[in-house]
Amino acid sequence: MDILNLLTRLLLWLGIGYFLWWILKKFIPTNFLTWFGGAMILALVAGAFLFPDDSTIGIFWQFLVFPLSPLGGSILLLALALSNGMTKVNGRMVMVALLILLFSSMPLVARALVNHSEQSVERAYLSQRRLCSDICPAINEVPVDRAVSIVVVGDNADAYRLTNALNSRIDADNPLDPVLVARLNSAANVYNRINLARPFVTVTAGPRFGSGEEQEPLRQAIRQQLVSRGVPDESIRVEATGTDIRRTVVDQKNFLTEQQLFVEPPRAGPFDLERTNRDANRVVLVAPALTMRRAALAFEHEGIQVVAAPTELYGTPRLEGRDTLARLADLAPNVNALVLTSRYWGELLSSVYYYLRGWMPPFRMQWEQVVETL
Image (cartoon, rainbow, N blue to C red; front, side, top):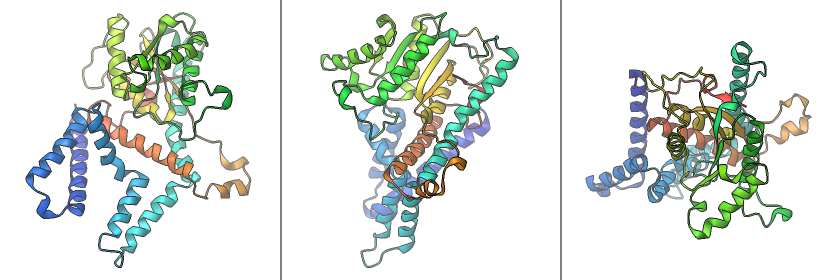
């Protein structure tokens, strides 16, 4: 690990610690903020990083980062504005909270943030096309024929679900979330596209699809959805351990190693891996576009070469072809824009968390130069 990377992580840790201390001093009287109480809180914070899959600590971590979200930050500022009583409201804090909610709820702002994030997927695709013009075969495509596994990021803790995604009446008997169904269909399309190999298809469905008898109908529904699209049943793995991207990476690495389909390449540094070998086995990653950068780099950090198949692209075409009324409508705040902005911000915080845990390479690493994209 180089010095710059180490110093960056150290500064981030110090920043998080200072923020927590500031929150404690604002809301907890000094007389009650004893060493014991401080030690307990620090232990919970440390546990959130040492045991990220523990449900209790996971809930605590959600409360911890809530003030950093648009909605959480606004609530915190409003609470601070009222800390001196109803008759002594801090107008500046109220104004800042109002501005945060206003801009976070504008479709124009939400689309700009999401487009900025999703453009990295497009840059990765163009980068791969330029590379293929020199070294790839005549088909001018990434080597998906070397894919030994397709990983579907399902109902995970850090994979965002659409709040308005409901089954239609015709699909009322389908127990699966429509967003998960769309990802399963994408994975099946990739599977049918590969001619030379028949990869495994792993669905990280989360604890809702556990190993108990009660969850068996849900697991069978996932299998049936894939089988109906041409994926053999013996190639399907439904895993309940995928509560986050990190556990998905560990599960996939262990599974491919057991199947003798993955050998960790030698490395001279934390992210010094050879990625120009077209004969190396690949993992096709089916995940939301907002999550793709973090997920792909988490796999690549462990030496697993990724072919990204992003889903749920929220980006919209350019505004030149839209009329004036449509552009003005983008300035009217709405709850869907707030949800989208919150998802973008939550993904950013998750990336910082993964970086602090050492699960991702340094931020200076340009993922579009590393990850292949369909």
